[in-house]
Length: 88
Image (cartoon, rainbow, N blue to C red; front, side, top):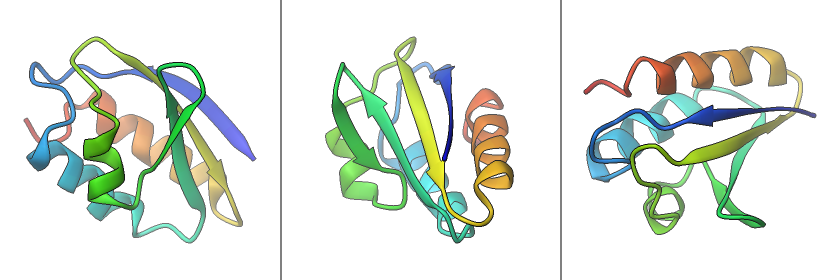
């Protein structure tokens, strides 16, 4: 298991479009990809409804957690995607 904290840079947070981009990319990895937010709340990064339910806003910090055979690649790939603004 690997994890890393990252700040959400999108001006509107993780609304439908960036949540979809995040999920679409997370699904490409075999690892289980989740993130912690607001203390102990956990969201599944491969589920749009779970990501939207997290209500992550711009400037919020989340902790990405990847567990599986491609966990290192998954963590790096998702971190780069979030830092690039998730297509916005």
